[in-house]
Length: 238
Picture (cartoon, rainbow, N blue to C red):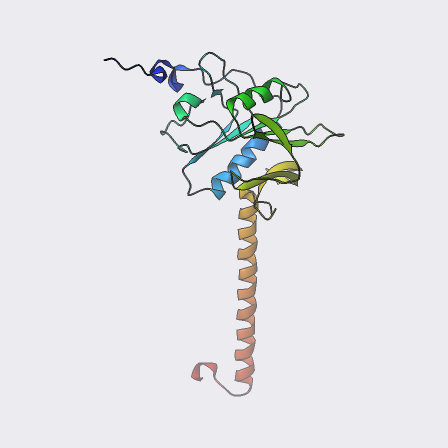
């Protein structure tokens, strides 16, 4: 008897377009998710069960066009599939819906507060994060959690994402030499996870301080030797 598997009739990633040919509206739509991804790549360096996509197509339904968020995080998938990496994210192949989706709003809105939000809700995306740096009267960062099939706004900065084990929030900092407000990951105590650049700078500072301490110790040892010799004592004979 022939067994029918509907998934065998669905297109695979190689058969689907890997881009909608729509450019991002501004640099922030690339830099903000790239910063979050870079921090994760260092923080979760030894983990292989996650994937963070930046401006990558998500195919969530065979009869619907792909949706392309500025960034998204999936947990419980292979970090790397093969050396050519992912062409797109195909939900029926991955068998895992992204756990978090990020949209960075530009001057020209593209349904971040309406149509896209509904699509992510219907997909079952647990956390929907919208960052609008142009907002003044309302909070620029909104984090929604899917509860009983509807998105509920979460409060605080940062917002703790228990299922991910990290918080997300905004604060002023420097990334790629640009000082402005960025989105960052935070630990459970609310402390910001350092960026790769900051960790490198921190290690350099530690190395410099350690060298300074070593230099001071060498100077003290030299002064002691000179003092002993002035008293007629040869330090090498001690």
